[in-house]
Length: 344
Length: 104
Image 1 (cartoon, chains in turn red, purple):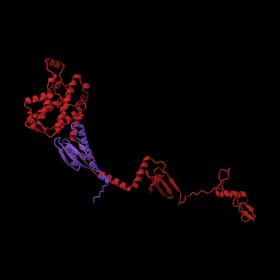
Image 2 (tube, each protein chain N blue to C red; image 1 turned 60 degrees about the vertical axis):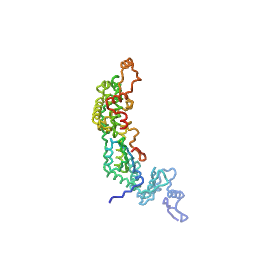
Image 3 (cartoon, each protein chain N blue to C red; image 1 turned 90 degrees about the horizontal axis):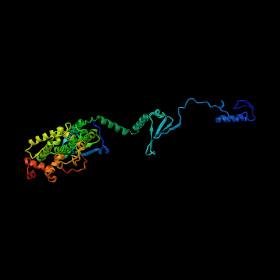
Image 4 (tube, chains in turn yellow, cyan; image 1 turned 30 degrees about the horizontal axis):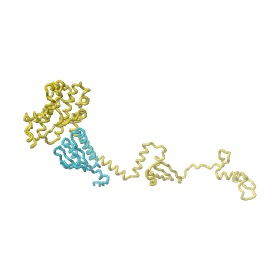
């Protein structure tokens, strides 16, 4: 019975009608062909064994591809894409978010700025309520009129005085700026002026002061201005004129308001700012002494001390400075007696 | 129609009351800030000897204007404190609402 081999297509004589291959070799090769196998030792697939390549992709695929990321995974299933987002704190809870634009996701290396933008976009999608609240807040902020900063006049004046830098190194380091003798006078005056400036600022903050206080402070200024040390001050001492100006102003006030027991003591903003500025400069470089404790008597020279010793006057017998001042004021009739003061 | 404003608990916490002692030198500047920005305030006392006004101010920190006004006020007061260091004694210009001031 004549038959055709299914592998080599050669004619052969078969005993059985069901015989397909001419030999065992063709039978084996046909088996390999069916299963896509290549004989060992051959590099290329036999032409007869090559499977034709399908050029057209089928319209419906059920291929599943997964892209892994730290924060989210993209699962591609056919035409649909899903993103699995992980919660950083609780990884078991996640949600599926459909992607709007898959092209951006397919890029392997995305610049950081784009990445941030995408994360922002995603957060906007995930939290629409929050997003709307932010927009409302921004709109609210834009609608509000801009705040107009208000500066204090007094503080502005103080800062202006500071910019003028009337003291500077002269106050910080008097011994470096002036000669020793001059610097000594300056330190002496500075200590007293600081005390007087502080007293004036405090008094100006009170609503009312008594006449006696005004007399005392005017007298202290008078002693300071009249002192030999003050007159020996160098010409470039920055506060000399201002001290004299204050003394004249206090004298005028004393003359004008001498008939009042209690009076309002006010300084102009300009003058107060200057006083505060000077006092602030002196604060760090001059010792603080209370008005009741400070001595406005001048520092005696060695010669004067010797003369005093020769004349036999004992230092311990000398009354304190404030007592001298008090008595001199009393003699001049500037002070009332103690009983009247108490009643006042 | 005016949109409804819902105030959350967080927003309510930003409505605060601050107490200030305003010296006479700064009174006009502080009042300019309060009136200029329609900030609710109340004068609760005066210290006659020191010429100071004790003021309770309600701030709504949800609004920029109030926040800025608060910063403005506190900036002025802290500058003043710096320049007057040692002259104001124990006087504290910025207080909390709970702090009591008996010297009216």
